[in-house]
Image 1 (tube, rainbow, N blue to C red):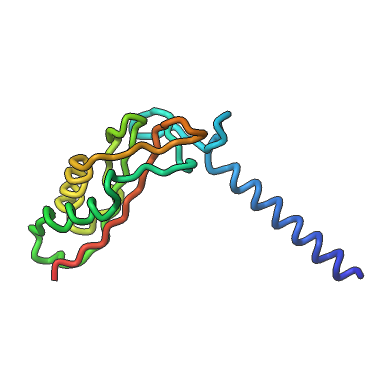
Image 2: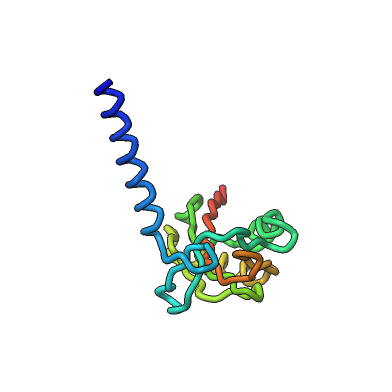
Length: 144
């Protein structure tokens, strides 16, 4: 019986930690979606929303654009993972574009940022209201 009580206390402690950790990731607005103040633009952006932003026509459209338009200019960088982040505003326009990771200098990531700006984005929403969403996009490219 004591071992069951001990297990229940441990489970309760874990649940309390999980709830505390979730609320620590960002402020939760009256909308019910967590938001933060973006350090680059200093605007309020949402980090998790009911409906994430998406490319008009699907991610296949974006991947096709990336595949068609990215040109490697670094012969030493045949394969790499790139991470870019940006804000998709309520009108679908992008702001706050930034390179998070580019092992090949910043040439490829800058090309990725140009390409994502040239496709049409559909904004994300929280409680059926279009909101600004911080979007992180990992891209792995192999030029071999």
